Length: 147
Figure 1 (tube, rainbow, N blue to C red):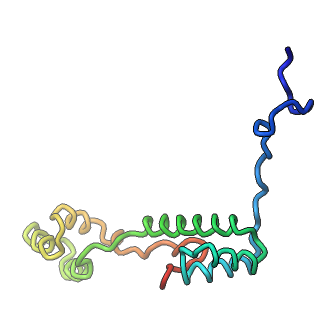
Figure 2 (cartoon, rainbow, N blue to C red):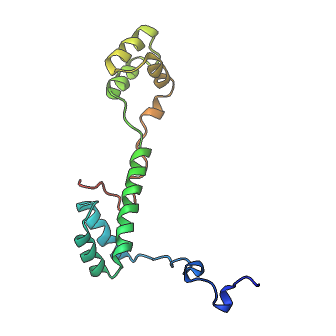
Figure 3 (cartoon, rainbow, N blue to C red):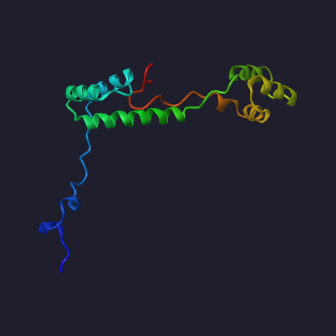
């Protein structure tokens, strides 16, 4: 008995599959509409998604996926941004006064900032690293939801 092949039509419909869905390319106006809606509400309900989908001419499931992906991008970007140290301004001012503070000064700074002295010592060696500006903002919308 020969194995069934797709060409002779004997394969079950589930086994044949439909192949991959073609990638959707967003126009700038569609992207702008999605971003504007995302900034207002990153978790729109089905009714809002359906209205938006109809307005921009895209199927609602694709709009739903876009919102899910954009929330993921925003979260990933937020996690990548360096978090400021507590009392960093005080640390910068202290190191401007004394570029290489002694152990007693570092211990006092650590108590004030709520950090370990070893963190202060590392910061003293690399002050330029701690003061860097954050990387490029946000996901595709370059906006923080709700703000």
